Image (cartoon, one colour):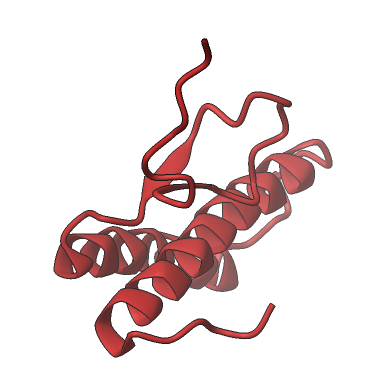
Amino acid sequence: MPTLNPFPDRYRAIKSSVTDSNPMVIDTEANPQDILEAALQRIRASSDLLETLHCQCFKHGDVQDIPHITHALYLLTQDGCDLLKVAQQRMLGWTAPV
């Protein structure tokens, strides 16, 4: 007999996942301050990378670096936004619009 998951919405998949099994999830029951700190860490890293790129000279850069950089920025920013949404829902007790 299959067991029902007592926390059907506890683990929320992050949008940046590219697999069917969603190995990276957010524990929606984690401390909201910890979720917020994880979000801020990713958004800060994304912002720092953008600032570094803004100050760089690309004379010696390689064209294939562009997709690598944009992919890293996408992962950091999307994960940060997903974490912020969960933190917001936990702290304010409401569901953000999709």
